[in-house]
Length: 316
Image 1 (cartoon, rainbow, N blue to C red):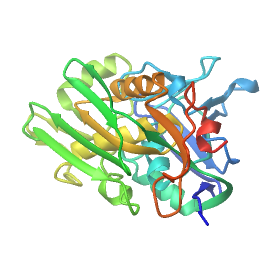
Image 2: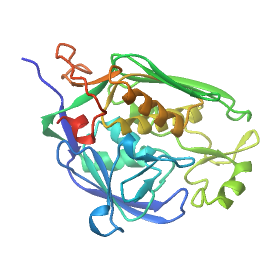
Image 3: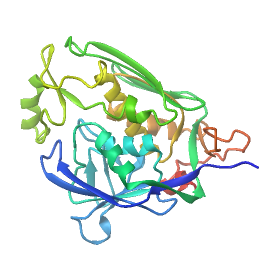
Image 4: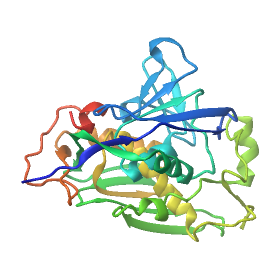
């Protein structure tokens, strides 16, 4: 008898508050359990009527600088979702409703660690419906100047990434990881977002980084790290880019069975990769996830003419 992995959600609701990295606004947020087959959804509690819900899905991605943002048909938006999405992906949470009273997820300490902590405190429970994973069937690549991202078939979800900056504090870094046995939490989840001191004034003048500080980002000045506590990993910068990629890729609406490779890639290129992947129905399939394996290869995969909705990806 074949046993399949079940969908999951939180056991209890749990809340937090913090500053928005770009808006500087004080935001309160509650992560709530959600029904099977609903995926990850955001609800703007400061918006009245039926226009407050935004599905965390690649179809809803809207252009935004230095973060990932989504919007619904009523142009209600939520930005800087990538670290929370990475925590959901890293802990295997399929369904959750995020109630939030503003347009931006709080930055917390700049990593996914506070969200991992919250979700673990709330608890994770299995649901009745089977989980499906997104199986990559053939390689897909995109480029934008010197930025490149690709995804290809693989037995598990794995990522390799490389970056290069002029500052000697960052320089060239590369890292590769296969996500197994809950290693997201310790290997990637603590890596913080980062920026460069010489760029801050211009970005703030443009209305960004209004809530940024040494409490929620690693700041590089020339060849030095300004944070008194230093780095959490010697290669924290590239690990954070992997964290961002995990969050961006979870906008596929399902856990991914495949290998992602990024070179200087960012949010826009990651989203372009998802769009390109789903444009080719022969490049992917949704398959049930078998206990003890990433996906059940003996089950015939159903190919879809269009990309899965969040509900379809979860298991419907």
